[in-house]
Length: 70
Figure (spheres, rainbow, N blue to C red):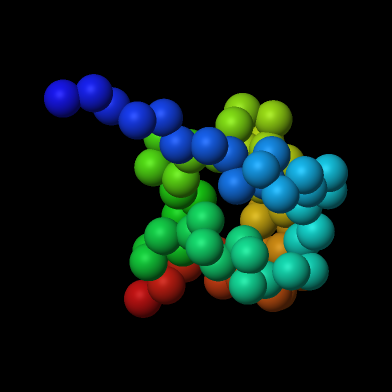
């Protein structure tokens, strides 16, 4: 059984900047407990994972995303 590598969503769509105001996109990369999902599960490359985590943290600070879910 061969393991298939996932391609980065942002690289395939040629996204340069991940906007913190685009909450719909950011919610796809946050778990049910409001934790940032591991790049092994999402298939995001290291460059975009760093930018994604920055955007999620910025959106949390601005009040667009929750810090925790109960």
